[in-house]
Structure formats: structure tokens, C-alpha cells
Length: 337
Image 1 (cartoon, rainbow, N blue to C red):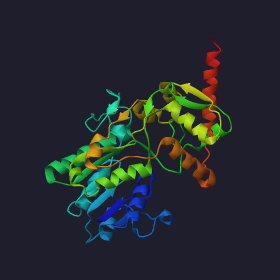
Image 2: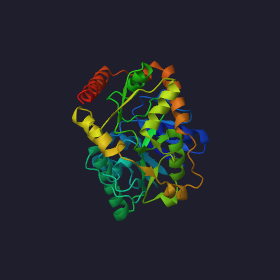
Image 3: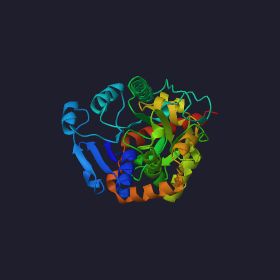
Image 4: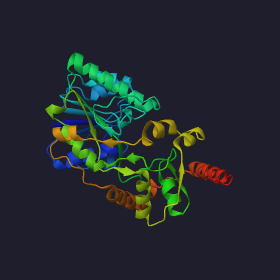
């Protein structure tokens, strides 16, 4: 198959790029600005262009037709309209990455499947994804535009540690606090349920949808089947680091109210909610899909890689100071009783 990936080097898309390249049966094209080509596997064709420059992209794909176009960096309806102009009639399938954060909040049932309503009043990011899905399904119903929607949840790779509460520069500062024996913040009481998915497992499900006739006009979520509490997640990370976890539990609402970080969306609109994903629909469309990277395995690979590569150890002193302040306030409050 001739497959075009828009982006292709992110947390989710890099695993798909590598998996497609390794099976050696496809002509794989990446359309991006070419900033991370050194990490790409051999045999991948790069179309160097900025997807936001529609005229440039139109020129560079002139005369080309694809079996599948895979969009990983579309966030607002205007970008979907652009893709529709570029690829309508040029692809047999358009696969759009949405988000499981689009599912109804507050959660009505902790068991989530593709039939769960989409509504999230807490996070603009999620509302924009819903609007993109709505527009794509309109194109499908009215024109037969061959769309497939994919909803990932918390997917990670070996370049960062997935966490609930972190600053704008990523999660390394929290890992550093753990290694230094400093207390780390866990939202809520840490008992809400969550799912972490390694990007290589996600890629298996995603690739099974490429060229799959049962995927056209449908939405699929792709996640691990393993469910963990946030306490288990943080304990696992500390265990891999070989340190004792020193945790402080703080309500998500308090964290939202005392910071400029987007905890309204990322916590109350997402990670603070207990969710268990039912992947039955995906498994019917992609028989044999079975994620096999348990969290403690995936996090061990991530931490080993991060500790070997200083470029992934991005410090965030502003977030570190904010954590100290929040924890100090909590400890002072306890002394009042």
C-alpha cells in the first residue's frame, strides 16, 4: 500500500512509521518539516513541507494518490477543511487521530466504548477534537469521504515518563523529585482508574485499521487492556527508579485553583476520571490485536532510555517551586487541626 503520514515522528506516529517500515510491504511517505529525519528508519520517503502551507503541499503531492492518509497533527476544524481540500479524491482512506478525552465528562459510566457520548465542558482541546470528528463524519455522510477516526488515550514512548501532574516542560522534574526523595503530588486520593498504552502496542491496532474496509466511516479507541490506579502508576515508576515514593495527595480542584497550569482540562476533563476502555470493537475489526507491553515493562524501557539521554532530562524549576509551595500549604493546613 501507498501510505502518507502527516507528521510521523511524534509519540504515537513514530511507532507506526517504524512498524510500517519494518514489515517492508508498503510505500511509506512522511509529510513534515523534516526536523527529525535522523531518527527515521530506512526506506521511508520524506516529503518536506509544512502541512499548514496548503499551496506548498498541493504542489508537492500533485499527481500522487494514496491508499491511506494518516493525520496525526490536526487539532481544529480549519485543519480538517484543509485536509479535505487536499486529499478528497486522492486517498481511499483518511485516518484521523482524535482523543479519548473527548468522551463525556463528567463520566456517566467508567466503562468506555465507542458508543459513549462525546462531550467535555472542561477542555477546549477535547471540544476541538469533537468538532473535527463531527466535520469528518459530515463529509463521510454527504460525500463518502473515506474517514476512520481513532481515539487514543494516554500513550507513551521511551522519551518521557507518563504522569498525571507535571509542568509545561514535561515529566522529568517529577522523576527528578522522586530520585531526590522529595515529595511528589498525586491528584485526588490516587485510587481513580487509568490506562497507559505503550506506543508500540498502539501501532499494532492502528496498522490493522489501515486498508481495512470495516474501518471506513467508523471510530475506534486503541488502548491497553491493563487498568491501574494512579497510586500504582507512581509506585511502579518509583520501583523502577529504585526509590521510595513520597507522595502527597491533593484534590484536582485545588490544583486547578492554585495554578496557571491547565489542570481544568488535563485533570478534571481527563485524568481525574476513572475509566476502563472496552476494546471489543477494535478486536473485531483487527482480529489478534493484543497489547503485550505491561506498564512496568514499558516504564522500565522509558526510564532506562531517558537516563542515558540527557536531552530528554528537561528541568522545570518553576514547576519544582510550585510543587514545594503547594505541598507546604497542605502540610501547614494539617497543623491547624
